Image (tube, rainbow, N blue to C red; front, side, top):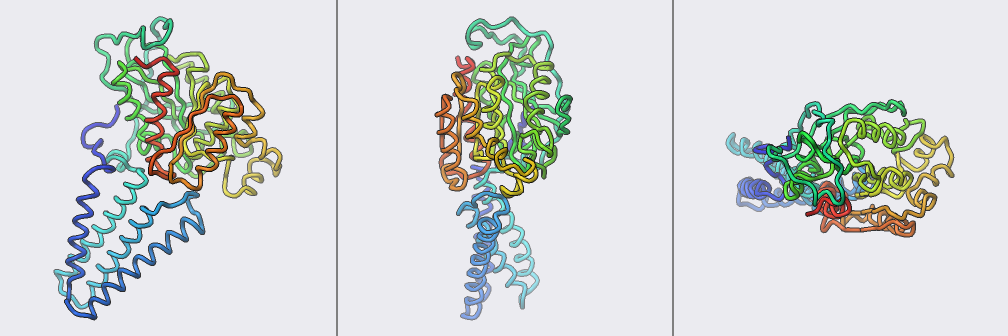
Length: 432
């Protein structure tokens, strides 16, 4: 089931951060007003300045110099991290020459400041939008729907579909093992969302949305951090239970691996995603057969995969959703990528870039490509604009959107899914 109750309690865009922030300010004031003299005032000022400076320096080194996560840290994240260090520095100063009560307040303050800083950063990047996303979830094995489907719809499904009595109020998410029978690829378990229309005795043939996580990560991130199941399920409730069947396979093999959705010495991930996964979907789920009712999408590394596979396999996917993808498959540096995946061939690497694939397989007379990126994502946005232009030049119908006030984060993914769904619904005839 989609998470409800306490697990659905929001941690982003909720009073949680305001309550923690107010509490932190009160405790910080108490700790700062320890002694009304010049020496203590200098200590407080120096600790705050030192904490802010250290925070800015560390975020600059981690985010800009070393580039640990290959993303550009936002000013909001830098502020929360730096302010947290500054507040903790003031608390630590209260351990020297003070009574037991003040030491206890300082200890509680350190925990509160750290929690507030974490909540502030999470509010910025949106990785844990709910309590359920924070604590994680184990998904039970998917219960496959009835193999007996309803009659083939003539015309848009929204016109012919009548929800039967007893149809579940919401959809369901479960895990499934999709084996690499042809590719030899060794994936982790996939996650599958079935809308309520797929859970009836004679379900209609529904469109398919294959979604891919970023790296590091896995299928569960698309449901916990991107809120994929919740967003699609909410949309389905306003369309008589109709929604795509969403399949999130594992294109990585492990969280710290990245075969880049290619067939290479790193694994035959492309064959897995374009042969094994579609074959399993067709064999086990009541899905529409036409390519125009199949879409592939993803976030970050998964977005790069989506445009790669959508461009090179138009016979499979009629729609593409690229959320904050890159201009080329990437595994470390360009030199590392060419060495590990392309046998040292620069020309093979260039041919695998989305823009090269788009040019090689053009024209695309009936493919919809949706590109979405954070408006503040200075590192990925230029490349997204270029790939979108190349897709348009190749004949695709292109939609390009900026997620307002977001960067390379899960808020962007959440916005993109919400923004893309109406476009896909219209293409699939699911709108009323």
